[in-house]
Length: 483
Image (cartoon, rainbow, N blue to C red; front, side, top):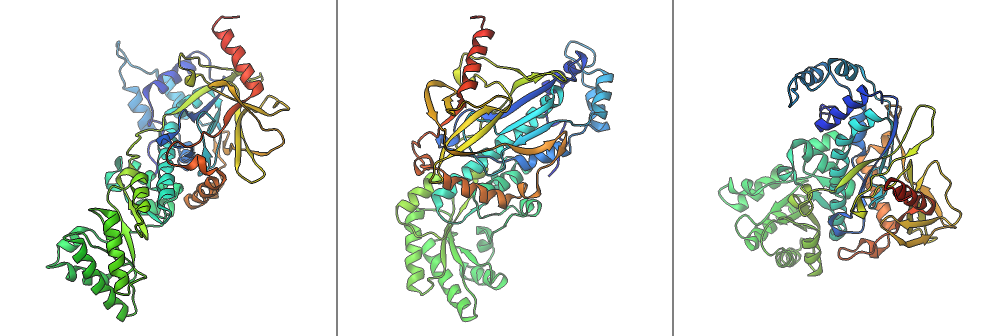
């Protein structure tokens, strides 16, 4: 699903790039980090996704002649042309040199900790900001929503939101992210082809409406698809629809076939599911399941399950593929350090009147600590080029009084190589959506149940290494002229 990557960008990234070029900053090295500031959906975690598309972005990041011709004609608001011909020629021949480290897709992540680290020439790091945020923020949001939906469903969930998704490309990547988050299949056949995802689907109301009556429509579908037969029973009347499905199911049984399920797409879903289950069981079709759809999300699904509805599987579309209740993750990409060739890294810091927007300096990574039980104990944001204190204490980035000692616990670091000197090194298995889904499943099992609950989840401890916290405090005072 490649598109013209370099121009999938904000114009100010390109104007800054010309400024870096013009003012002799091409050799300046920079370190940027991508993270998000708050939990999506008021939950207790997020599922990282979008790194496979990021790898494609880096592989295809080159300005072709058409790109240069377009940029060469852009007018400056004050008169003349916006870009200098010499700069555009530099862009045309530029080769990417950035190094990118990222958490693997499916990793459980939390606010304010780096998901991606980009180092390299500052101009190239800058040019990646917008497209990187575009793919990783969106897909992380969708994978997280899918994980929440699947946790509520406690059974197979089919994603079929393409018709309501945010455009063609957004719809394809949303389907992939939904599978990374835990969905068992998607209706999106292009996503299935591109990413090797399981696809599923049967028929719509229009199939039933195109025949003289519902029973004839059901019989015709069973004849055409005897091994993929789930009948949609709410076109006219659910109770009558289930009766007609039972008739077809018994006829299929006589032919050595099986009616896999009935789907209900409207009405009081919990009540209708119970009714359908009772009718199917009474008819002896105990192996025929009940499938529910119709603007479902994790809250509706939980309510239906809490009412005791016996559901085989779920179809979730609009509210999953559009992340209906939260339109954006709020991912950010911030400069944290710079250096000149052969020099040491120098901290960079953005100060804000809002404490949550105060950035963290340094070349950062994350240590994830584990209790002996295998459950997560806490995440430490640390500087790769500075020693970690003996006590291994983490300090909440927004509250110095919230601290936790992690010494003695086993840990692993989260960021892994994605690209080295402009060349993608991401292993093939790290681009595989089904492998990422397994990482999501395993990662969620490591969380305490209190951190996964739908309402008022416990906050997972994430903090800066104590020495890094001290360093940031000193830098804030220096930049504010306090000392």
